[in-house]
Image (cartoon, rainbow over all chains, first blue to last red; front, side):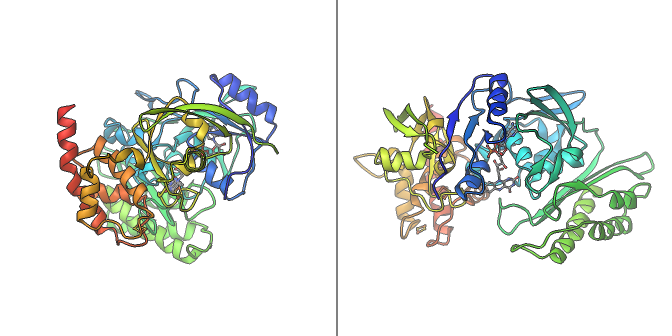
Length: 285
Length: 164
Ligand SMILES: Cc1cc2nc3c(=O)[nH]c(=O)nc-3n(C[C@H](O)[C@H](O)[C@H](O)COP(=O)(O)OP(=O)(O)OC[C@H]3O[C@@H](n4cnc5c(N)ncnc54)[C@H](O)[C@@H]3O)c2cc1C
Ligand code: FES
Ligand code: FES
């Protein structure tokens, strides 16, 4: 369908953008890549009175690497991540997960900030952010606050963002050398949203014992979240096949997947088990 | 609610254009309905089919997922800008040779996508071509001829980037 009518603003500063959103009192919406917002409007699921285009806001399109990890500005596009050769070693999990996002043309426009704000439970980036204990910097009329990714997502398409708040940056903690990791998802077609997916890593100690296991799920959930019991099943054990199968079995019991027209909850649960087995076997090999 | 209208200027296939659009007008509709460039096709209007692909500032985008007001000041290339008067371009010739179209509905999007890809990555292998074309749906050809056509057209782009 055609888009519902709206007014359009293209501010040049973050302060102006925030002020426009504040004045809109919940009926104004930020426009970043438009790759989720415009389809949602075409379906007439939302009809904002004002779109505040972020395209002229300076400084939000940087990928910076430092001692404290990887910082992605809200306007960093999938394309920028894909083309940043440093990320393959600086954050291999991010690079691999983002390779699964959407298609060429969408990747040229879609942004990290828009994706996190949209909060699709099947999206890859929220899964990476939650699994890696990322923090999100949010700027609104009252200033900037930092929120843990785990606290940011409330449910499908729902976050703690206030009406006048923008995501400005996501911060992924540094990736230590020697970390073992895997990312696996299943989608019906390449580039589609995942029916289920898992991100996993652990840091083996000198004896090869898995420590600091982080396991996150997407798709088979109402919001991306970590699987504490599956992590506990892996922590403190040598990451051999037995430990991996045990962790994956726990994960399948731990998730609470939805049933919708794409897949049943039982199918998604089985996917989580298989995908986590694959991810951890890859991590261990 | 009344939609706001705005006057925008951009470059379309190498020529400057000026057009008054309402904020809600997508780039696809602006091209087709206002600038009468109907080569760009609209299949789904919500970002899944790729028929509406055009090239903005050198990058392939879905013109149904971009507002016309967002291309202010930019260079836009549509399928009309990918042909020339005298003869078929290498990409067109490869599509013809490999029967890479039947009804032709998806073709403008396929051509725009392939042109953007080969311009930025003339060495794209078959796997990359398939990956990129996964964003464009075709109900007729079964895709293999399209992949073959794009693969064959690479040579022309390698030469071009060598010259540049
Ligand atoms: C066919 C198709 C397939 C796709 N497949 C996938 C997939 O497999 N995986 C995946 O993850 N995504 C997928 N996407 C979505 C795509 O990645 C989007 O680009 C992304 O989800 C949203 O980013 P955007 O920049 O386009 O945001 P927009 O569409 O511009 O905005 C989305 C929402 O975020 C808000 N917003 C935007 N920027 C900010 C900000 N800085 N601060 C606060 N709020 C903000 C907007 O108001 C809006 O509510 C797909 C999209 C399409 C059309
Ligand atoms: S018409 Fe734009 S993607 Fe289908
Ligand atoms: S040729 Fe008919 S849709 Fe592709």
